[in-house]
Amino acid sequence: MRIAIIDESAARASVIREGLAALPQCEIFVLTERRGMVARIGEIAPDIVLMDLGNPSRDVLEEYFAVSRVLDRPIAMFVDESDNESIAASVEAGVSSYVVDGLAANRIKPILDLAVMRFNAFARLQKDLAEAKGKLAERETIDKAKRILMDSRGLPEPKAYAEMRSAAMSQSKRIIDIAEAIITAHRLMGGA
Amino acid sequence: MSQELVLGFLPLVDACLPILAHEHGFAEEAGVKLRLVKDMSWATVLDRLLYGHSDAAHMVAPLAIAATLGRGRPAQPLSVPFVLGLNGNAITMRPEIARRVRPENTLGAAAHVGAELRKIADERRAGGDRLRFGVVHRYSSHNYMLRYWLAGCGIRPDHDVEITTVPPPFCADALRAGEVDGICVGEPWNSVAVEQGAGEIVLATAQIWRRGVEKVLALKESVLEEKLDAVRLLIRALCKAAAHFVDPVNWDANAAILARAEYLDGSAELIRRAISDRLLLSQDGALVHYPDFMFQYREAANFPWVSQAEWLYTQMVRWDGTPFDADEARRAARVFRPDIYRSALMGTGEPLPGASSKVEGSLMQRTAVSTQQGEMVLEPNRFFDGVAFDPAHLEDYLKRLP
Figure 1 (cartoon, rainbow over the protein chains, first blue to last red):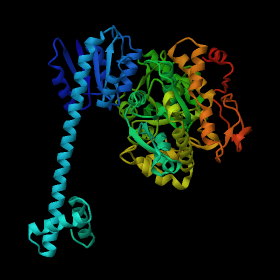
Figure 2 (tube, rainbow over the protein chains, first blue to last red):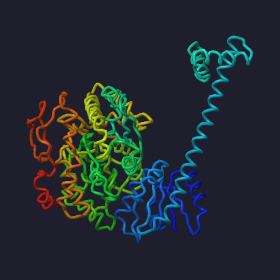
Figure 3 (spheres, rainbow over the protein chains, first blue to last red):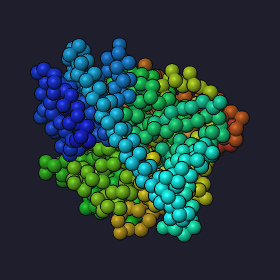
Figure 4 (spheres, each protein chain N blue to C red):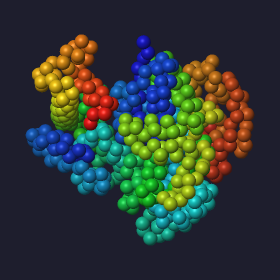
C-alpha cells in the first residue's frame, strides 16, 4: 500500500509518518512543498492520500483527481456513506483522505483511524505547548507586578505577593488580572 | 435566548457581510448569534458544512450546485436563501502580457482585450507553450466567467489555453514564478499581485457580465428546514450589514475590521480599495474607479434569482462536458430559494421583486420592475457579447454558445 501524506507542517507530517510506519507492507511518502505537488503525486501513484484540512492546496488536489488521467485508477474523496461518524471524526481531527477506486473499506479503515489518532495527538501536543507558553508568560507578568510593588512601596517579596493574592480574592479575580492591572497603572503613572 | 449559527468562510473581501453582521452587532440585534470559522480551501468549507461542523457557509455559487448534483462527491442537497454579492473579481496577467492586451492606465472593453489576447494565445499555442490561467476552484464563478469571456473571444478553454486551480493566497506567487500567465481571483488577491509587481489587472469580471452572481450563503437543505427561524433572522442581519458595507462613511472602519488577523489578515489599504470600487491596474499606474466592481446591496443584489442558478447550471454542463439533463436542471434551479428570502424580509424596508426569475443580461437601460414590496429599478445587466440568457430555453441557449 502506497500512502502519501501532504502537510505544510513538516513536524506534523513526521508524527503521522511515524504512526503509520508500524503498519505492515506500507510505503509512506511525505510531501510538504506546494510547488510540484501534483506532479509528485502523479509519480508516487498512491493508493491513499492524507491531507490536512487547513491546506489551501486541497482544491488543487481535488481538481487533479477529478480531471487527471495520469493515474491508472481514479482517486476520490473517501466517503463511506455508511460511516458518517468516522468521517466526522476525521473532519474533527483536521485530516482529509482520498482513496483509489476499488480499495476495500476494511483495508482503508485501520489506516484512516491511525491517521486520525495521530492528528489528534499532534493537536494535543500543540495545545499543551501553547498552554505551557501561556503559563510562562503569566509567571513573568506576575513577577513584574511584584517587583513594582516591592519598589514603589518598599515591600518584601512574600508581602507583595500576599497583597496581590488578597486583592484578587476580595475582587474575585485571578492573580494574573491583578498583576496586569498593576503593570498598566504603573505605565500610566509614568513608570517603564 | 438567541440561537447560534456557525458560519464558515474563506478570507476574501466578499466574506464581508457575515463578518460585519457579527462585528457591528446586526446579528445579535436580529436575535441570532454568529460564530465564524475561517478555512483555507473551499473543499474544507464544504466538508464542514456537509459533516455538521458548520450550519452555513460563504461559498462560490457553482459549488453549491455541484454539491447538490453530486459532482466530485456523493450528492447532498444544498440551499441558497441569500446571495452574498455580485462580481468583485478581476483577471490579472503577467505584466508583459497585460501591457499588450490592455490600454495604458485604463480598463479596455472586454471584447477588445479578448481580441488582443487571442493573438497571444495563438502565438503561444503555435510555439507549443499554451497560455495558462489559474482560477480559484473548478466550480467557481471565476472559472465560468473567465471561460465565458475566452470562448466568446474565440479562445477555446482547454484547447487553446489551459485552466487550472490556484488557491488565492498563491496567485501572486504563481504569476511571478510563471506557473500561470493569468489568474481570475477575488480581492484582495489581484491587488496583492499588482502590489508585488507580479501582475497587472486587465479586466474586472463585472465587464464580462455586469451583474454576475458570485458568493452565496449556502446551507444543507435539512439544516435550513431545521433552523429556518434563525436563518430568517440571519438574512435580515445580512441585509443590514450590506447597507452598512456600501455606505462610503463606513469604508475606513469596515476595511480595518476585515483586515484583522482573525478575518482576512491582510492590508486594510488594499481592502478599502476593493470596497470603494477602486483598482490599481499596475504597480506604477494610477488608481482607476470602476463603479459596481463589487455589488453587495443595491437593486436587491442579495435576492437569489432562480435564473442565476439556471445560468450556472448551463455553464456546468458546458464545461464539465456532460449532457444537458432536464431533471438535473430542475434540481439545480431549486438550490436557490427566493421563497426563504421573501419570507425573511416581508414587512421590512427591503424591496422584494415581483418575479423570482428573469431574463439575464437583457437590460440595456435603467428599468423599473414590478415588486411584491417596495420599489425597484434595475440597471443594465448585460453580458459583454450582448447575448441574453432566457431561463425558459436552456437548451437553445446552450446550442447558441460557442
